[in-house]
Length: 464
Ligand SMILES: *Cc1c(COP(=O)(O)O)cnc(C)c1O
Image (cartoon, rainbow, N blue to C red; front, side, top):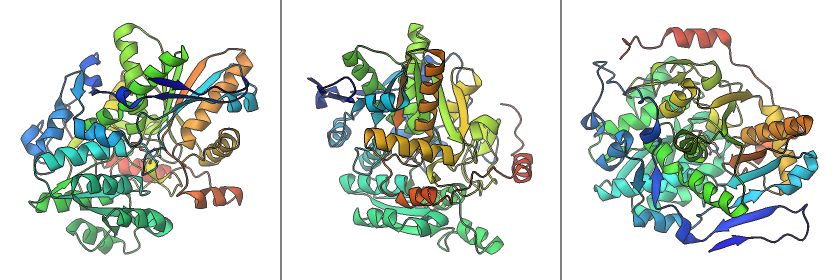
């Protein structure tokens, strides 16, 4: 069954809903359609390609096999679809009120992932990861979180699959966002500020800089260390890895079905990109249609100008963390020692980009853009006043670019169809909006010297 809201006038926004039976039955693995394969991850010690067994201390085999799979479709287990039913399929909206406010001939659609219990797209993978861990008898998961979105999603997933979740939260966010921590604790997880005294990695950073604000790279080191040194504990990552991007493809697959209902198809697909998972989730199913069916959709990843891995980073092998515990992966990176300037879109503050997203960018299959935070919040406010939903600071990057494309259409007199992913709501981030209204947000550029230094310290890897 399909459901389409019936607005009274052509100026009202339209909602496209699918029945639960249309929750996708499989995840879409873009590896099957790539013109060139992804470069393999390398062992941090030997520099040799790693195999599934090398990852076994950190992840359950079910997820490792997805990480290296070349199957186009990977079945979604029923217990995962059963939890997805709580909020999936998520709605697709035609943002007619926004179109009217912009006076643009473009058609603007957005897929809304803020309807999940944690308020973002992240539970799409957290639920799947908790399930595959439970299948292999895992009782505890250690993970990191930046702004708290991933930590709360993993905490939520832990409640459904009986797993103890402990979260290392980047210290600046831990102090700025007490409600995210409260949410994690409500779901039964524990949450500490990172760098912490609980790990070798944390103690090492604190010895160098007792006031370290922390970073995702540091928090990842702490969580990986806990998983690697405790037999009963695995690690979970909320973005970047191929299996995480895979789980997010429910977004784009549903959107394709909803565009069928709307009798339309996007000319442009836009997602904000931190580690790349919600972007890949909305974009890869459409990119797959470009690759297999000769469609010609433009696909744009949008990142913050303060942390521009895809537009300014080097495409090279690098560590995923600061203390060099993770495998080496080939990606667009600002260097694992680079600490991005503080930024309200904490979820976009990571030094690297998903290898799959980096790869398709390098192959020229997608575009990338970087935007400053003030214009993003301006777009977020404009969107809220037209459509009613307050976007997460991360999501405002996609909103900004969608509005800019709609304004370009107006100038060029074109009625293109634009889709963007609204990855989450901003209800836990209202302090950022308060700062924006007070004029307290800086459009910081990264420190070029610090970036050059971090890039000069990239690991020396013979091209594989
Ligand atoms: C975490 C987060 C992001 C960034 O992560 P990706 O892996 O790049 O998707 C974007 N939007 C929201 C709402 C988030 O919570």
